[in-house]
Amino acid sequence: MAYDKPLPVPDPVTRPFWDGLKAHELRVQRCRDCNDAVFYPRAVCPHCGSRNLAWTVCSGRGTVHAFTIAHRGTPAAFRSAAPYVVAMVELEEGARLMTNLVEVEPSPEAVRIGMPVEIVFDDVTDTVTLAKFRPR
Ligand SMILES: [Zn+2]
Image 1 (cartoon, rainbow, N blue to C red):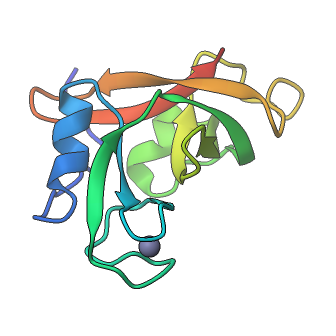
Image 2: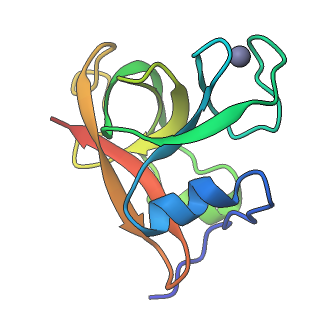
């Protein structure tokens, strides 16, 4: 079945992130001046204002920082997927990213803050791969 949900539209700043996922690598930026991890992709470090950012490959491991269970898909393209877990995952490298948890029951009893997770590369089309996470 064709993928029917919205797809990312990479731009020059975000392209390395999406190319990384396609290659099954999770890449985030790190600032060469203040050494903080930067996500989402940006041209300027949100911590110190430097433009001296470098792409680094992450381990793909992290923990659940926050989550919710979506019982109604919003927007409409996600309705058939509900219920599903929307989570903020904190990577070992320090950046946090919004994602979906998979391979876990979408219930508040099954998911917990601090739960160790690892990346799942979801090849949703021939050209787009999304980062999702599962318990580890
Ligand atoms: Zn910085």
